[in-house]
Image (cartoon, rainbow, N blue to C red; front, side):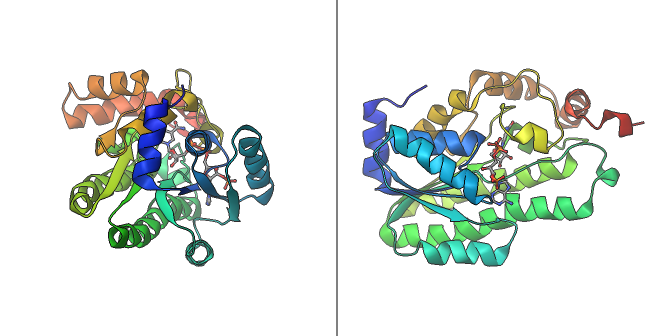
Length: 272
Ligand SMILES: NC(=O)c1ccc[n+]([C@@H]2O[C@H](COP(=O)([O-])OP(=O)(O)OC[C@H]3O[C@@H](n4cnc5c(N)ncnc54)[C@H](OP(=O)(O)O)[C@@H]3O)[C@@H](O)[C@H]2O)c1
C-alpha cells in the first residue's frame, strides 16, 4: 500500500519536515518510517542496534532522497532517552512515532520479572517520557503529531500475555485522553491498535501468528488516520477481530483471548 500524493502533501504540510521514529529498524516502525520518507520527511530513527540502524538508513536512502540521522538508544534506560532528546533538540521535529516495543507470552509466574519490568519501561515509561516532552514542544509551536502503538489486546485483559496487554491498555488510555486534551493546541495524538502483524514481534514474544497482517497492510491506514481519528484499528483483520470481540461482554472477551493466546504462545507446554 502506498500513500496518495494528496495524503503525502497533507502530512508534510501539517507536521513539517522532520519525524522521529523509535523502533524504526523492524516491522511496523520500519514501515511507518519508509512511508514517511516517501512523503518527503527527513527522519531520525532509533533502536538498540547500531548495525540495524545503519542498514535501515541505507535501505531507506536507496529509495528516497531524504536526510536520515540514526540514534542508538535502549528505551528501557531513562538516561538513554534523555540522551536522545538532547541530541535532537535542534531539529524541527513535527511528528513523533513511538513504535519501539516488545511483548512476552506464557504463564505469568513463569516469566522473568526483570523482563516484564523491562517491557513496562519500553512500552510505557519511554512512551510517557517522550510524549510528555514532545507534547510540550508541539504545543509551543501550535502543531505536531504523535503516533502511539497500542494493540487490539489493549481492550481487555489477556491471559498468558497479561503484562503485555496491560502495557498496551496503558498506551491506549493515554492516547485516547491526550487526543482530546491536546487537540485545542493543534497537537494530534493517534493510538494505533493493530491485531496480529508478521514482524520481529512474534519471535521475541515466543508467539506463532498464523493469520496475521503484514506491516505494509497497516502503515498507510495509520498515517491516514493521524489528525482525523483518535484511535485506528488498521487493516481488515484488525477490524474484524475487534468488532467480533465487541459483540460479547468484557468478561467473556477475556476468556476468548485466553483461547487465542493458548493457540499462539510457544510456551504451551508450561500451561497445565
Ligand atoms: N506485531 C504485532 O502483532 C503487533 C500488534 C499490535 C501492536 N504491536 C506493537 O507495535 C510496536 C512495534 O512492534 P513490531 O511488531 O513492529 O515489532 P518488531 O518487528 O520486533 O520491531 C520492534 C522495534 O522496536 C525496537 N526495540 C525493541 N526493544 C527496544 C528497546 N528496548 N529500545 C529501543 N528499541 C527497541 C526494535 O529494534 P532493536 O531490537 O534493534 O532495538 C525494533 O526496531 C510494538 O510496540 C508492539 O507492541 C505489534
